[in-house]
Image (tube, rainbow, N blue to C red; front, side):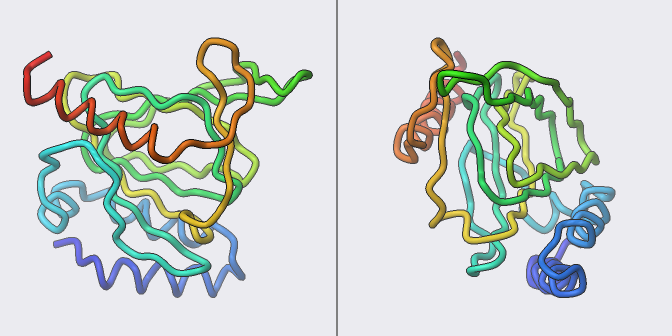
Length: 184
């Protein structure tokens, strides 16, 4: 069964071995989500959308992110590398690149399914959609203090850059939970 303490220790060891880079951490995450039933047994079946802090240090943050059915998060950046591993459901990512006027344009996409693992570089801008009508669970490992970094998001209509609004984005998870509870 997935053991959170062991997983965090393995990520810390990988981070040290790779001198703060993501390559070895990716292997730890890929190994974990290769056995999704173990992760589900260790973390529990997702019951509601949200962001659960699993481990937090100045150089490493591990989150359990559960996307609500059909939920979309607008284009945003992290400004640190990320490793994402899906243990249940699906996560579709659109990748964006900066263009003139503080805007972005679509530059690619990647669909992640149960058991998949991918790396986002520190400069990646992406939007995320859970394309299915049930919850999606993903382990996100970040190469830094996810909660202290000032980030950007882009308005979904104008594609203009704005300061990342944590409260607004957390409301999206709660809205997804309301829709889930009411069957919408």
